[in-house]
Amino acid sequence: MVLYNIKSKYGDSGFTIVELLVVIVVIGILAAITVVSYNGVTNKATLAQNRSNASAVMKAADAYFAENGSYPTAANINTGTVKIPTNFTIIATEPLAGTPTAITYVQASTGYCIQYWDTVATGKATLASAGSGASCL
Image 1: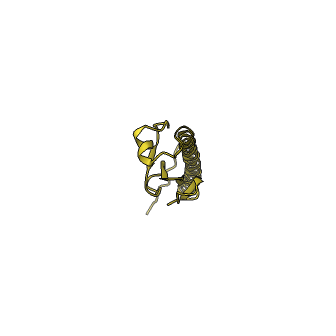
Image 2: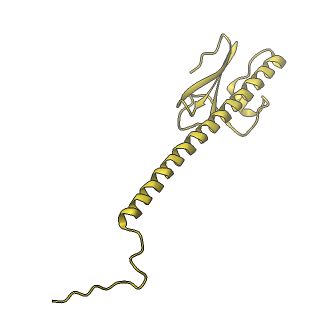
């Protein structure tokens, strides 16, 4: 029995399957690192936005107090009586992970509490509590 050894006219060039698998694994590791870094950056950006929004609500509540002698109710804030930016949501319940950009405003006769969701620490954070009548959720 005669076996023929057929050779390419270009020689034995090319990549082995092992070399291709190594390259694919390295690309996969780099992609995983990139995705994790991207998620961390977006979480920090959302947290900075939440802090800024909560600060805007705090300033609006303080301005309302200066004009009227009492802090606004959550209904006043949501109906537009208090001048706040309209690009975020104000809720009257505890900020949860499902509502990462919601601001909680709790008002009592002599104070208020403002909370937001901390996307980095994955928990609620309190920005401000003024007066003595409001307790944070």
